[in-house]
Image (cartoon, rainbow, N blue to C red):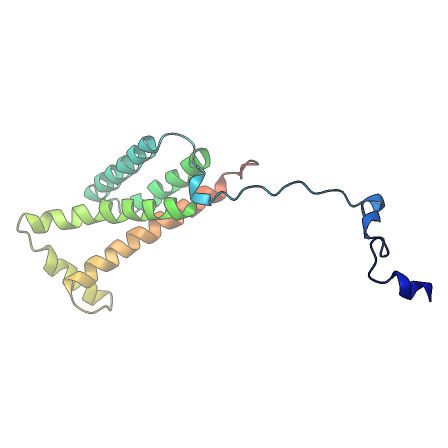
Length: 167
């Protein structure tokens, strides 16, 4: 009967004794900081932009020399360099894809600019590959191969480098 008299009264449920049982007092919550407000990379962005430009020039030179696998090597180098720079994937992957597209796009576009029949060659290559016989299809397929090479190289470069403890 005495229990019914204690119902609803202050201190009757002994909730204040939880701290004595080993549950500590929590501090105030941390203020929210959005992820875009924190820098997640090391080094100046201009240095990394210069690296992207250098990678594009290397791909252009490699394609001009007939080395079709250069986007893979540049992507591998970018993946290894990303260990030092700690760029997020949502920034690094489009940068590698842009390097590959520009690096292969300029050598494919240059002959057409000077009046050579590169569109006809792209049409024949697309038809031989089993794609629709359009020049744009052949060029798009070549650019897609370059992007895949660059991204696979980047993935391998990131896989070969150890993870940072602070990231």
